[in-house]
Length: 283
Length: 283
Image 1 (cartoon, each protein chain N blue to C red):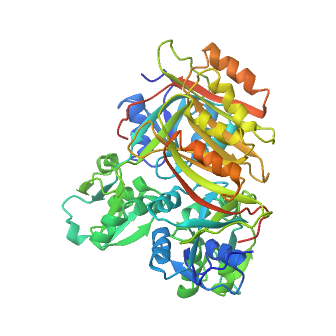
Image 2 (cartoon, one colour):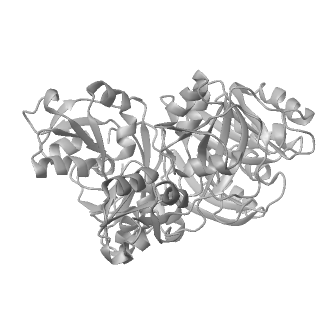
Image 3 (tube, rainbow over the protein chains, first blue to last red):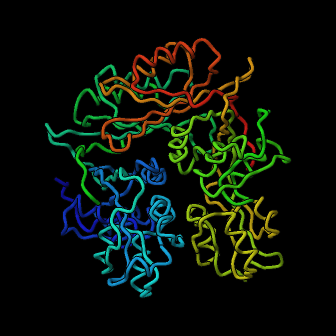
């Protein structure tokens, strides 16, 4: 049950992008969407009020955390108001009527090409990197190329009226992306709804500092669902820590833990407290 | 002081790649190199004995952990025998004699293009994604294009006899990549040399499990330099943890900590114990 946010909702990519699929899975098929060229542009759209929220990929089982979006969250004062875990399945798309035998070249983002290596090797086709998965599908349609296929989402096939030549061509079927929804105002999670709270902090540089920071949560039986250390740019032995805890900011144990944590941190910020999303929906 | 390993040493990329620069910084300018098309191919070269070791990027301050290489480490039985932290500086390269005014297009890997956005915006040039930074420099040379520049390393300029049109064109100057050196046999770190040990493990799925795992190290005053949780593919609430600890496997406190840790883990593996590299060398 997504929060009520003014539409449209911003996402990064062309229509048919995996992020657009996540947007519609989260907000419903009727949601108004605002395609943005870059993550920066999606944040700017929310800042200017052109979008009521943005949905952005934050980590992926194959690629890890998307640090660019963590950086942009630190630069803007938005709040995470929701999350979505979505399986990513790649499709081989071509103009309707084209057969596999006609395909000599495949276009897609280098990361998507790399994730479909076995299939591409078997087909014996040339690979040409592009900026974008959905953008590749768009180019196949616009240029009317019968010798080129694109690797993109099932939704891109609909958007650009392409046929799926081969389904789920990814080498690793368990490719999940976690998306977060960012808005200008925080939400409060209704009592009884499983919640999650995302934090970023840095610690005094002393032995055992991270252990003490974790004790703050463990001593209050608060469960962590993510913990990642990341070297602070340009400061060699200092780190940011990204932490997700399975609790709502409205719960007293978490409030106390955060107050306790502030005794140990040189910087700390709550990125958001929001309903936890356990099942998965296709993007 | 790099360990004595049979040459050549494998790296991923074309000659002139950032990884090749890291290789020469680590093993010395005279080292024999073996360029490999993919990370998988670099691992395979060590497996077959075609290379005595491989040097591979494992994390980057802008992009985070390179999970593909962690995955490959789990699949192979190699050992980390060394590490190198290298700043990454991007150069704008063109055929000698070409001026900035002649350039209409820039080729590079999408990630490098994204890291030089401000410069490219200012130049007002078209961006064309390619597979590889050094590969782009090679193409500019091979095709003799006077209207195209490549974004690649300083070393790529030498290898393909290109001129540096503009230096250090990256938007974010503090872009560091950590490389690890992998070999078939482990090394032992001489006493008195600062060491690091890298582990991967998964825990029984119960509250406080990670806190207990960290206590194993904190109770023995062992300092952690990296900790990252990563969802296990296809198993929704289970995680791999990547952990680096500032100690050698030859030290008793670490041996005891690992034995203690095994009481808590469902899986654990030492990826290597090796001399710690604190300064930085240009790649």
